[in-house]
Length: 201
Image (cartoon, rainbow, N blue to C red; front, side, top):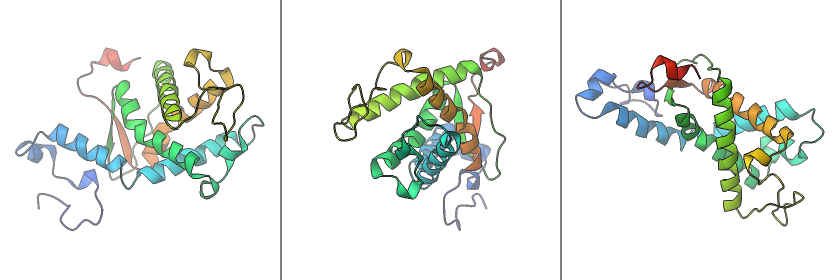
């Protein structure tokens, strides 16, 4: 058979025909990219969001300066915080494209990629900017104190003005993206047009 999708009950990129076969019918790279985004926006977005949150709890449960609301179990979180985690998961492919990585669904658990320091710096800056836009879109604004009722948050500032402790928390989360993706059977791959010199950032 050309494809394993015939009797499949859920979509997996690894069930598709080989790229050689796809070339006979479509632009296979464009086709796979569209399917990849469909995957992120559908069944796996929730599990990725939960994994992100649980990892955050694991990394910060012993810190005294962390908002206690963020340390609750997923099922006890309010919907706004759940949606924030989903938004982060949704945006991971776009963030990784910025540092020239693609994300591919595979059958087996892939190796965990380790970011370079330069890649981490770029991702942290990008993620904070994205978070600020998302937060402001939800009605939040900069304030001296974090207040859920007034929707004010002192961390809604330019990345250069962000306190070191907050920057570190973003570094923590970005660093574990490859692990979360790998555990969900998503493989990070360098985009093909790069030369070796560009991968050594």
